Structures are given as C-alpha cells and as structure tokens.
Length: 534
Image (cartoon, rainbow, N blue to C red; front, top):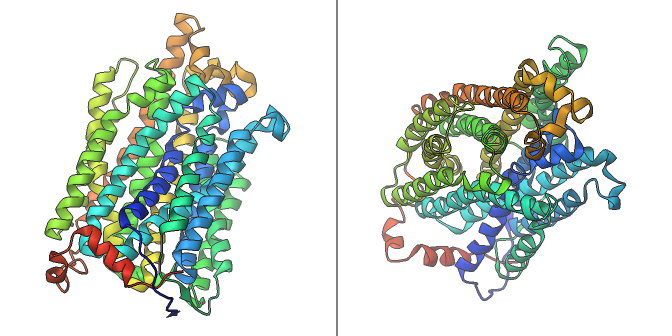
C-alpha cells in the first residue's frame, strides 16, 4: 500500500472534526437503545410479542456483520469516503424504519416484518459509524493521548445509552414511535455536512482485493448462530431438524471462513491479529461485555414501564443513574490512562463491579422500588464505565498502525456479536419463562396469537387487579431471569482481564517529551498537518 501525496490544504480545527465524529457516534449508539422504550407500544400496534426482540437483534446483527467490512474498506480506500457512505446508509435505513407499516409501504399487515428488515439496513450503516469513529481518532491522535478522547467517546456512548430510551420514550408519549427514527435525519445530515467539509485524512492508493467470500461466509455463520439462540427451545425444539441444520450451517460457514481468511490477500478479519495475547483476551472481553450489556439492558425499560408502571418518558429518566455512573467513571478512567499510561487494572475492576451490578438486578420483583433499582443501576454503570474505552484502547495498542482499522473493526465486531447473541438468547429466555409462567395463558389469550396487545402499558392498566398482578408477576420473574444469565457471563470478564499484559502505550516513551509542550488538540492538528488529504 502506498500513500499518494496531495497538495497542502488549510487544516480545520480538530475540535470541529471531533464534534462531527461524536454526533455520528451518538447516532449509532442512540439507535441501539432508542427503540427500547417504544417497544411496548410497537408490540401493541403490530401485535407481535413473539418477534419483538428481532427489532433490536436485526439492528445489532446488521452492525455485527458489517463492522469488519467497514474497517477493512477504510484501510484500503481511505476512511473519509467510506465513513460518509456509512452515514448515508444509516440515514436511509432510519427513514425507512419510520415508514414501516404505514400506508406508504402497503399498510400495517406486514409492519413488524418491514421494521425488522429496515432495522437491519440501519444497522449496516451503524457498523461503519462505530468502527469509523474509533479508527479516525486512531489516525488523528497519538496513543498516549488517545485515552482522553476515547474517554470522551465513552461519555457520548454513556449519554446515548440513556438518551436513547429517554428520547424514544418522550417521542413515543408525545408524537409517535416513528419519530424515534425520523429524529436521526437532521442530526445525521449535520454530521454529514460537517465531516464532508472539514475532515481531511490520508488517501490510500493500493491494489486491493476485497474479501467478499470471507465476508459472506462470516455473515452466514453469525446469522445462523443468532437464529439458533433465538429459535432454540421456543420456535423449534433443540433437537429439531431446523436447529440442527442451522448448527451445521454455522459450523461449515465458520470453518470455511477460517480457511478462506488464511489464504486471502486482504482478509476481512486478519487471523494473525489473534497471535497477540492481549488482542485475543480483549476481544473475548468485548464479546462478553456486549453479551451482558446490550442483551440485558433492553429489558430495563420493559420492567419499568410494565411492572413499575412508568410512562415511556419516565422510563428513560429512570435510567439516569446508570448514565451518571458510567459517564463519570469513563471520563476519570480516560484521563487517568492519559496521565499514567497504565490501563490493566481497569478492565479487572470493571468486570468485578459490573458482575456485582448484574447480581443486584437478579433481585428484581414486583416489590422492587424505583430507588432500589436506581442504586442497582449505578453499580452496573460504574462497572461499564471502567470497561467501555479500555477495551478499544488495548485492542488498538496491540497492533501496528497499518492494521488499526482492522483491529478497530474486530474489537467493535466482537462487542457487537456479543450483543447479537445476548439479545437473541435473552429474548428467548424471556419468552420461554413468560410462556411457562402463570401470565403465559393470560397473554396468549389477547392480541391474536402473540399476546402482544396486553404488553402495551395502556392495555395492562385496563386489566382487573387479580389478572394484572398475575401478568406483572410473570413479567418480573422473566426479566430477573434474564439478568441471572447476564451475571453468569459477566463473571468471566475479570478472570480474562487478569491475564492481560500491560504493554506501554505507543507514544508514551518515544514521543512523550516532544508532545509535552503541545495540547491534545495541537497534537491532533499536527497529525492532520502531516497527512495528505483528499
């Protein structure tokens, strides 16, 4: 790969570029959670309780399968054009999601199927947003100072995780759940305009050969595994030909993927990255983090709206303790890493605290007060704050600069794939426990075959006290069961983190003196000034 020099250009203020990147990251993370407070209303409108988790799973799965592709495309063609393309795809998907089930697309009969399909399109774009932001920051900022900026990104992610349910709830209560998707259009348009006009990055010219076969095999394998966790024991018996066939398809696809990647000129997921112990460990930690975090987090607004009787807006507000814990710790950890250059202790502590938070959430029942739940969420948020930015930082510091995009893509990929499996598995656990509870027959008797009509909080309020108590008890028990499984997976995080070897951050020794006289913004602008533009 060779870099083509371009004429010098006037360099933008790096803060403007970072502002545009943060808007893009906010959009990607916002839509990971924005649907959670609107789901009970969507379930009620489309009467599709058995398929509601796919609204989340489709988005995360689209993100998962596209993440390594976006990372590699950025390495090969230059990150700017690739990143702007991902924004456009995300905005198109957002517009289509808002129109799902409307008269513009044929009416409500296939509304849930349309929404799931368009959420997958939206997720394809979001994969490029998340990996692109991390890789571009890696281009602009030296590793020693990267902790500061990734701490800021982790803060944005923390805000988005709570702003998503809050914005989604407010819009659902006052407008329509469709506007939870339309709101992306002006924000995404602003980010597109800012980055297209101010961001200047290196342009690469190379003889590239995209590993489409590897990308296809990976997508098939991952999708088959997600379908197994979603359908196994619910739609089909574990020993059914459908589940066994999916298992065989997943195994063959992933074995073939590994075979193809070893021989590909430009592998979509370079397997040599896993020769580095730190990279392998942090990828596993990212998988478990996504599994527990994204999988379980989608059930908190459901608990608050149905069992605790909160409105969609209030269920978003009630998540503020989680955001507070995560935001404060993310900022402190980012600054500490920048100051000391040390990071190993943070994923260990974060794993222990996050597991404790999940353990507290297993205690949820119909008598849990909002104050108790707030305290539980603070603990969970603190644990997540220790982990969010350190996983990406360690992954990037484990590889050479030329593999930065691939490493960023792989790290984001494993977190996303963990979220895909978590959401699908926890959704299956929730549905199975709910159907087996005393609430199962009550819900099965309403809303057609799915029982989705009574999952709407407004419909729950119309039930008699005796029947409502049965339904709420079944919901609370089913949701607490989800957190039991989340806790079991989270316990492995500090164990894996213990074996991470602390390697000095690049730039912490060889360039520390030269960088000491510059502010972080000046360092980033220096990086921009030394890079050819396109």
